[in-house]
Image (cartoon, rainbow, N blue to C red; front, side):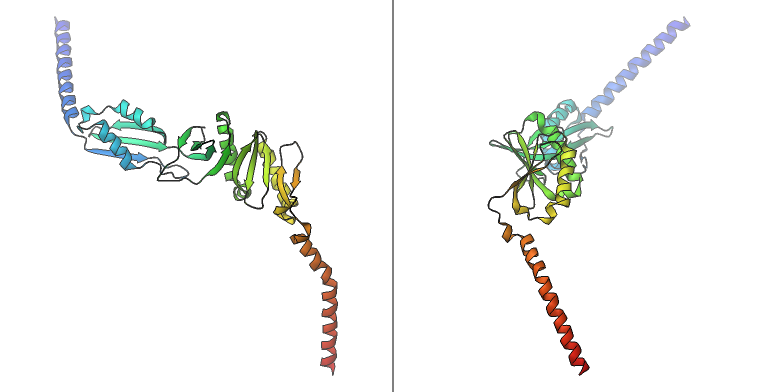
Length: 278
């Protein structure tokens, strides 16, 4: 008898709890959303492709009644994640009825001009369109770059950006006939690297070439410096470059005049000494 009474008591308690829960949920769902909070995750390199106003407008369209019960959180989260500029989105409701949206934007690794298209690519190799309102400063790449090469190309650019020498020296990348070329900020020459393999070795080789040899030359002397071959650097001379017009030639001329200058200086000192003695 006692067991039956205990079971009945539990059964009634469950029903009452269910009723109260249902009533509370009904009241909660009928309440208006008090607040919509948009948090744009801070990235290492700040980006501004979307703003809080754009997100709140999307929330408004998804829930015109502004009631908590009418907001479809999974559907809204899906729509946000489908935005090309969004890397990830998380949507959730607080118990007080506040809607929270945590959004991380994509950060371009480089900007690619390919055929008639112009777009960004992030470090994961994902393409997304350029913005009419905001332009992110990043490496410009041109040529028929394959999608399968996006990630390796992003890694190369990340290495360039981390190194002070490379970041100042290389300003762009071009792909022609299957070969990659780095465009430089000095001179008219290009740095041919071939494929995207052994990048560290190739960049170190070029840095050594600049510091030990090119620093004593005029950059206009070359049209191309090739690093595509193992353990060697091949340069292509500029046929329009005239050695006589170079800084080196001018320097040699000045050096040749030094004995004459020194002789005149000695004679002047002797004349001054005689004058002082008299």
